[in-house]
Amino acid sequence: MRIYLLGYMGCGKTTAGKQLAKILGYEFVDMDDMLVKTEGRTINEIFATDGEAGFRKIEQQTLQDTFKMDKVVIATGGGAPCFFDNIAQMNKHGMTIYIQMTTEGLIERLKGGMDHRPILKDKTPQELHSFINGALKNREPFYTQAKCIVDGVTLSAESLKNAIGNYNKYKL
Image (cartoon, rainbow, N blue to C red; front, top):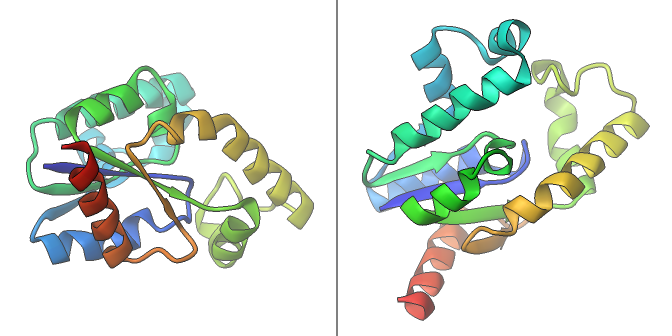
């Protein structure tokens, strides 16, 4: 089984994903880390040389590489479900869980590490709110195609495990 965790940066995909993988005895994979390792370049370098379109093609190939994996929890990049037919492919090849949070909740989580996130660096509080709010509005139609939606505020490995169990109970 493959479990894909979706959501905006700061929602908890990596933290809860690692914990969930441990509980299930699965491997944990961060798609962004996988992409960087395969390419031998940072995401910023890829964006600088190939642009967003080039990055999204590489990201799509990285996603396709995950289809060969088994017993794995995969933290996707925040935009990965929103391009090409990526969300449909994730749904076809695994269990998808959207970790949903409000703009305000994401800002609270992200404000301490903005220097490590170039896309957020140097934004005023108003700019940050507007930026995240706009991104969520654009991405929600893709994120909400996930098989399960969980609350990011109360997120834990246990809540993810319960979401998987409840989905399987009703959908199988």
